[in-house]
Amino acid sequence: SASALTPSPRTPVIRMAAARATAPVFDGKPYSAEVLPATVGRSSAVLAGSAALFAACVPGLPDWWSTASLDPGACSVPLLTMAASSALVAAGWSACGTDLHPITAKARGVTPPKSYTFQLLGLSAPLLASAAVASGWQPLPVAGSGVELAHAVLPFALWSIDVRLLRWLNPHVSWSEESVSLPANYAAEHGDSPVGAVLACVGVVAFEVYVQQLLAAPLTLGGSPVLGSASLIALTAGLLNHALANGLLNGLLCAEFYWTVSLMFGLSNSVLPVGIYHHLMYSMPTFVTRYQLAVDEAPSPAAHTLLLHATLAAWHCAAFAAVARLAPPAMPLLAPLDGPSVPAGAAAWAGLACVGLFGFAAASIASDYARGEEAA
Image 1 (cartoon, helix red, strand yellow):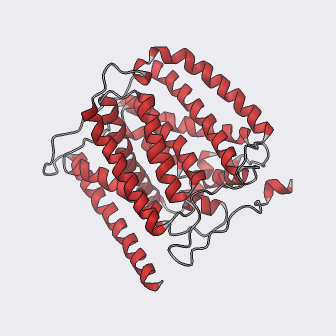
Image 2 (cartoon, rainbow, N blue to C red):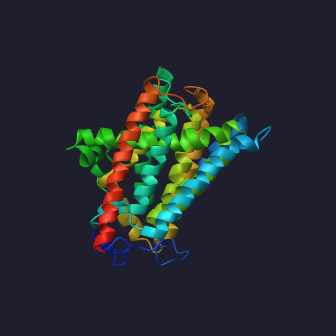
């Protein structure tokens, strides 16, 4: 139909004549409880199946939902880190405003904006994680084992299932087989730049060191149930930070994403599988074009996004509960180290290299912002 191939007239046009010509945080209008009946019916079936699977698995996973003792002191550091990150993003939002996520902009056929608040979020976290590893405050949670490689298969399987699930949940737009093909999507994103693909992967792995080793691991070691810490990370690092940086629709999507990666980390205690998953999520331009059209064509984009990603969150929780019952972790959770120390060992030197890489990128973006301010 014409509506399945033509962007909705509600699709906003983002103008970036100056740094503060930005989109509102509360995008996704019109707001209503109206949802597509076909999507509701299909989501209900997935939610019911997920609830049944989770109910069967969760009794054998007491650390997911209960804790014998909570150590407030151990949990205070990741909580303060989350608060500081959100305060930094809020300061960036106050100065630079909210912009479309670059991936969303490209999917809508809009020139990607500068997105300074998003750049602040996207670079401060891996820079902090890299510095913590380089200076001996945090270990690098990578095992280098066969079990870890087995866990690394999960993100590929999950990506393949999820894109087909989302296609099924959105029958109101047309989907090609290419749009749900991982090789086709990856080639479309990185085919002409293998070096860029490697750098992008390094960036998101470092970002996940921040989320998992600086936030999730110490919360779990401090006695927080897995579901509790995953929820907290989803609401702060996901919903709050990304809504300020890229709008409410992106915040809803990222709440589910951070919920997913936090639970995935709990399966292996390794950053490798979650880093791969994060990289794959940034490597799907053909799929995102159709997904974004499905959201924009819904009666209420915000309600539609919430329904889709609540469904994914439930499915992921149930699937990971089943995996947790069957597969051993790749490594134990690693506690913070006693740093600071002079860089020693491959992990520390890798962290130092990443400090240089992300520091150079941050300096370049700060310089670009300063030039834009002078021109304005």
